[in-house]
Amino acid sequence: MRKIAATTLAVLAPLAGAGAAPAAAEPAHDRSQVVVIGHRGSAGHRPEHTQGGYELAVAMGADWIEPDLVPTKDHVLVVRHENEISGTTDVSLRPEFAARKTTKVVDGRNVTGWFTEDFTLAELKTLRAVERLPAIRQRNTVYNGYYEVLTFQEVLDLAKRLSRQYGRQVGVFPETKHPTYFRSIGLPLEEPLIETVKRNGLNRPGSPVVVQSFEPSSLKRVAKDLRVPLWQALGTTGRPYDLTAAGDPTTYADMMKPEGLAKIAEYAQWIGPDKSSAIPLNPDGSSGTPTTLVSDAHKAGLKIGVYTFRSENQYLPLQLRRGQAPTDHGDALAEYRAHLDLGVDAFVTDYPDAAALAKAERGKPQKPVQPKQFDNGLPEEGQE
Image 1 (spheres, rainbow, N blue to C red):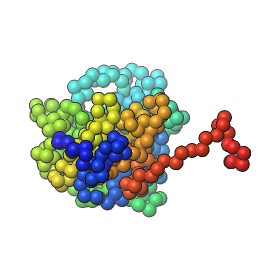
Image 2: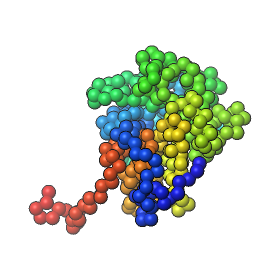
Image 3: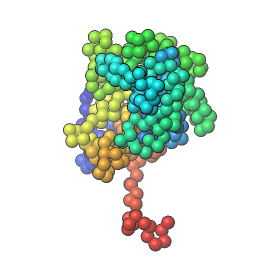
Image 4: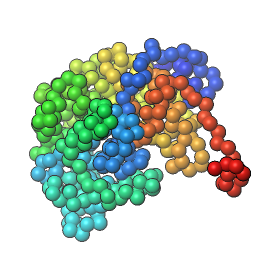
């Protein structure tokens, strides 16, 4: 990817400080149309892929909710971050399933744990979700053991209910996880996904279902039978596993070049890179010079949604960190503003509330309100 000169981008001002000239990267776009995507629900506030997480995401302003799809032993699509579920459910605490622990090779890596493809749906329904990052999001652990594992159909049903409740269309943004691996063991993802979308009357252009995958072959299979929008997810290093398995040397970096984007536009309508592919980080963790990826995608006729926005210091550029702890929250709104000014079309975020607020600002940064200081943490006389 080419880089845009720092002196031409006003977007750098909130991140890099003084020195950036006030010029736009590309013509202003309608920021009211930027899509806020609740990453696995509202992962900063509730355990991932849970009913409570999805409900809260929509209440906070998410336009779409994201379920990652993996299959059960009886070939039902369920919603988990990975097919290995020891970090997202209480399976390791269930003695009746102790013997199911095993090691498998998934996308060329050895993975040890418990896997959805070794459980029937009925068995998975006995498990309960837990917080995947308890050391970072300790408050979410209060919900451990409360929510069950959802099916893809249940997420579609939930989106329909939430659409009625809030009077707006809630989109569903499923990702096919490890599709080459699952096809190799006789549990392909695309066929049941296609069947489910059709059964729910959602197979149409402009559908509130947008299918994403890191593997181009998975999207191309979906494109043969569905007319819904498709989203090519892009990693920061290496290449899609289906290309690796096929001996294709094309890397994610190749796919983000103008010629690579043109090829993606032949089968997809969106690209979804890591946010660092749009605004890289310097070696010290500070924000670097934005690339031309956003404008290059638009020139190729593609929309671009970037992932994953989080509010904790450890996920923010150096300039935006606040407080001393990596888990303290920094100036996340400034990061959203910077990407809005670049012209992104969607945010994939663990904090839909923050993204919705940045979107509502229409890119007009507000001066932070400094809280009044009180002695001993108590209000001054007359304050309540």
